[in-house]
Image (cartoon, rainbow, N blue to C red; front, side, top):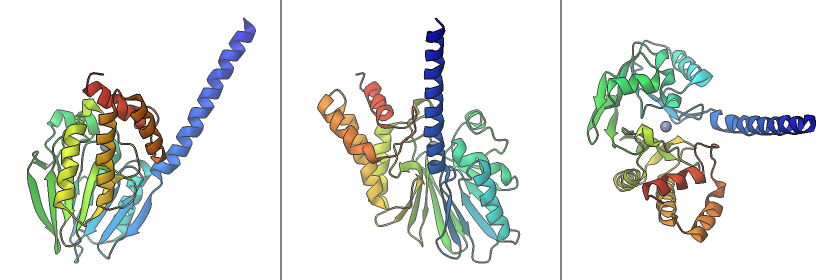
Length: 282
Ligand SMILES: [Zn+2]
């Protein structure tokens, strides 16, 4: 009996330590933040939660922040903005309501907030934020604003990663910011309860490929890229959807996509496969 207890405790310890090691490695990888000064007015923050940008007008009287990160990374981005000096009017766009994209909003209580058309209650529940949106963009609609000489178009693409996913396009720079509609070299997070719809997500990716050719693409997670990453994610969805129920195809795809980063139980080959299995009732 005593031996048995020791074995059980041993197994629990081994599992616990393994989880800790896996998460520690993942944590470092996922949350490492790098700062790219794209040009004098545009800074791209890769990692530290969802990717973010800070776009400043030439005379520093306006700042646009797209997604505000979480934890220390949100603070670091705020310090970076403070170091720019001046007293600029700040506008925040949240591409969607996930914590790793919105938690830093609280660092800018005076800012104007632009989001998708989430019901207030859902916004509060998902973001735990007091700061309510000032402008909500409905699915299919867009909103155009100028930050200095840059023309910024914010568009609600509807259901994809969540029920309301915004993309932002910087016309002069030909830069597309996708939020979590694009994961670069990572398995996507698919939460049905958050309004995720991979079928419509594929349609949205097709629109982005068609409408923003040759643009620099800033994904929600992963490195700065181009439209090839959109094509890759589209193929990933289509191939896995097509493989449901076909063992050999699934085995081949599992091997093919082994190089992608993932998060245990949350975003990996099996969670994507399970999602499409459920969709097709298999
Ligand atoms: Zn997300």
